[in-house]
Image 1: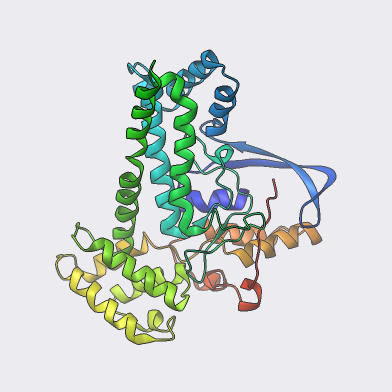
Image 2: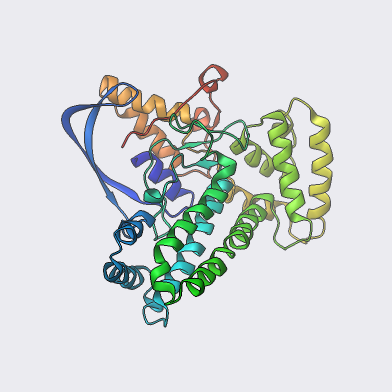
Length: 358
């Protein structure tokens, strides 16, 4: 919880944070017996989509209205006097969730359990249970031991985000309008904005990662072509983006080394360079901007497991502290932290599963 929260915060992604963990002296059964603890989590609020569903399911419309008013005052005070507060809140939460999931996608983060009780109306990531960072790129990647059908796979996160917003809209229906048809119409119009909001946020972040400073008509195809290239050869997601930064600075070798088949990479690089030529940025300036958009260190799964095992089995926090220091400063490449930049060995990755630990 603490490590993932700090890592995402350093990546600029809205997240809840862990303040403290107090051991209980008891054990809980997960994939094995583990020491129990009480986590203190801090957040802009702990209001979830599930909070609203609770009162909606009980038909407690007055409490639902009270909750909407409270949420607006806490998170969107500029909207507190809106003629239709529930509708204003729905639009605001949709905007925040679209932006949040786009940010996840651009760093290869997989939340793992995106149910409605893990969707905070503040737009912060909450509940780091079976989450993980993708390595060899595959949109169908699933790590969570409980996600047998791939519902929360990396590539499904935008659609699941929209599904959660539909559940939020359902909970708010009694407050959106007096007539059911009108309420459904307003909810549908709000939900129809999600895809465009997500795509805009995703492309905005991806353009920074690609070193682009302007908007081009073919940017979507350029980006998806890059991701298809990574998927075809299962190239490490984080390293591929970072080594593209080196390529922008004139060093192709480190990026080329990640690919077994160079020919498709050369074809795509020619398209990318042609796109860059339409802009006036100096190579050094572009490369520097890309380094600030493409981290070299993320909380890689094998490193997290290593830190957890040391703490649980040997009461040793040094591996955790070293990893924390690396991911808390994820953009500055350091020779001393070189092992934190490398993907897991194949024998670790094969069949790797994460577990819900909270």
